[in-house]
Image (cartoon, rainbow, N blue to C red; front, top):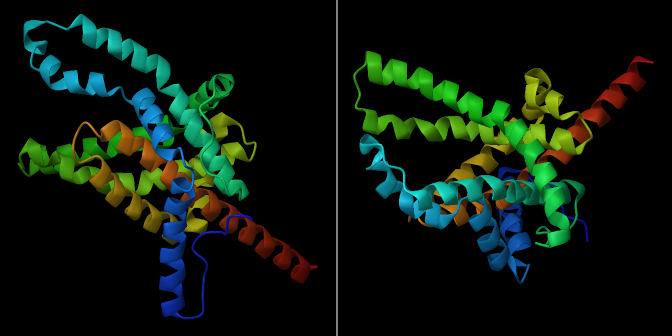
Length: 266
């Protein structure tokens, strides 16, 4: 049975609220319906951010002043750089299935699929660099200058300004990734801000509401520090079950509007 498109409009506010929460829950149910979802999340979390590497960060951080960098930390970091491509590609496949309306959301962790995951993970990273990471860095630079340098707030409060930019750039990056799945060149997806924003604006309310829920889920699943890798990977899978249908629905609706306009003018 095809996956229903997310965030359906309705005639009354009561129906709208009901459909909205139903579609939000579908994202969870489509992941949890996979009997091996927890194993897939554990594997993806380990490959995305090695928990042992994460455990060494506080200890290694304290030794930078003495010029020491533990060999174990460096070795784990090198391994992590070699593995994090795979979970990025895995989540790209989750997005593809959600976008195309396939009911089974989580793909498999098979050795035969790793090369394809790595290839698509590289594309996703390239898109994320310009649509998510660079805008977030730019935002934090502006915030630091205004609130820390000019207004004198303590640096410890800088983390408070992270969620607002993530709220926007996460769905903005998701739109660019969906364009790549439509066959658009990866450089165009990464650099064509005007087209990405145009498609984002077609369903900006739905994207931003989904992003709000993701930030809340991440705040819970990543709250215990060592759960960051698994919470991050679960969040990537979850949000793709929302963004894929939103993109498909909004683009399809936009095309229908253009066709109707052309028929009217002719």
